[in-house]
Image (cartoon, rainbow, N blue to C red; front, side):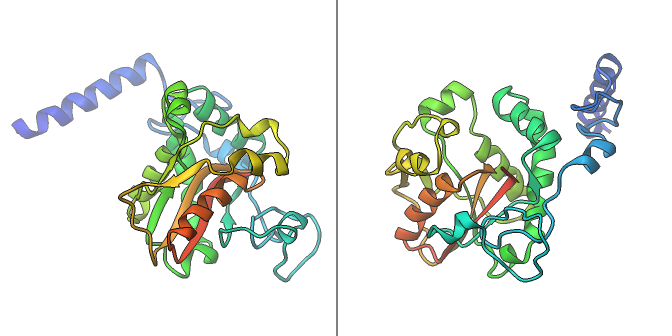
Length: 245
């Protein structure tokens, strides 16, 4: 009985907080059950990426294409990663949840984002070969102090717990860079050149790695990370993100 007391106290405390602050949907503010930060209606409204989409970067295409294809961006570039998989488009409610988590410090929204991120593991592109390690895209220490956390690390940690795939901190960011949001594709690539490095103790040779970030835009950040990992001997690098911009 004594061992059950802490559990009972936690349950009582949670119930008391629910009375003071009833759980609600972060988007529409309707009431939800405890631990649910997004209601069923808002989850259904999340813009899903459906076929046809680019086989490399998951960019959706509005036309009628039945075979695998590459978007113009991927046809013109050589990426160090094999593919980048996302199940949702970064707009509407998905974009809002990501922004509140990343820029407004709403850490509890990680549960919603990890749910969306975990859906990528059903994609055949990530199933064969099996992923050996999950690797978060690192932040520069200065940027991490400014933000208070690394969003990719939190998402990768949640996905590792959910999937059972080990988490590996293989990379570090050695150069502080201006935010990527103000640059076009070519400027993003130049801005990131030499920004990442393999950690001294990291062992990635012959491993199939899954690189994690919140949103894929041009792919420049994950491509630079993948280049470092591939140069260190990784067998392959694939990418999973919550959303595709």
